[in-house]
Image (cartoon, rainbow, N blue to C red; front, top):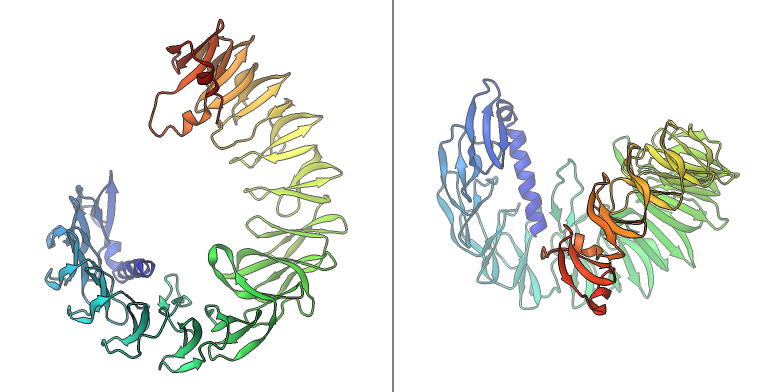
Length: 592
């Protein structure tokens, strides 16, 4: 319900904005330092100055502006005249019925555009009005429904209630069971249902969607005494309760997966079998709990991918694996892509609209570059297939390694690595023993040649000479710069290739701006510009990394050191905090 309420609020706010587009072309909101105002775009005159209102909505269709002032909300006009006083803790935009839900202290009610109270402030919660013309109310922990006149159509005496955004029926819970009411408050069924019907999102016709409904293709799914069945809009039984062991939620085409005696099939909203109940499993799971319009069916360890019309996308061929890889936009439509492999170890790509986009005949297939490029390996050679443009490019490489956020692809040939663009054009030839894109700067690459590391850009310009025995990439909580090692000693190089700390230190560790290092068998610390922070006078040095990043109580950070055989604690300014540390105290340092 709360998600649906948020959806409606956003929808109505955007709707109001579009209806008064001519006004918003005349007047624009301005904001600075957490304050809002309005300016006349024609004259550049400040209509409502900054410094007064902490937030302001766009002008609505009645030229009213919802605003926040001193933690209270009200309505004004474009000339800063108060239309509804700033006495409300919370205030909504006006709905189509002319009411805005408001809160005073801990009670909710509703007002009209004149500021008159229509629904009294007696409720613990008042939700938004739906198509039924009703809003959910909560009073003393009990639920009901109220209409736009303030009349309780369903008294606030029930354990719970529910309504969808588009239907005219209501669900009311009394004790442990649910009944169905109409939007006039008349009870239509006994309290016989285990739960209210599942809401599904109506397939959007625009960017805002069309809300939710209990019904798909005229039927809704309910449970009664643990048994699932379907009712139509007249509440007549379409599918007998308990006919199947389990029924999953309908998709947009009115199809539902059913389970019967550990076998699975698919029925439509009329209860008719449209895919025989003979399969070991059927799945339409996407990422993050989303349901797909395609189905993966499994029988005797073999898989097929069915389109939304239940047609096998791979024809008669059964598959060994099917991996969902989200979607690409093609001709303004979202197309789902699936990497598949058959039992002959041949791979390809199928689409949710029933196409074999990449034939199932390849040694390997990888989707990269936000699923816009398919890396194909066939006959020991790498090809690139552009999913959108439907073009195939040759490369000189034999194996895929990695892709970058910038659209470059790292490939391999004869144990050496190079880089190509999405057209298959070689940008960096295969002459390096290793290549890794620099984090957050992926036109640059850490490369290895003759057992030495350096950094080059996509045009092969040398950023960091290829002369180091190691170069770090960025890691979380690490420095932005590259830690480099040469002849057993470490230093720091900027992303632009400038030496920030020369390679003169051993035992190189980093924590939140401090580089703890050793030189000539003495420990100290420097910053990223090699300025000394802690002098090199200690025989040993230990710190706890977590003190620098997870010090939620903001305790002073201490470092454990040994100098001339004595264990001590120092702070980050080299002040001695404690001497004669015990072995137990010493052992607490050097941990995570």
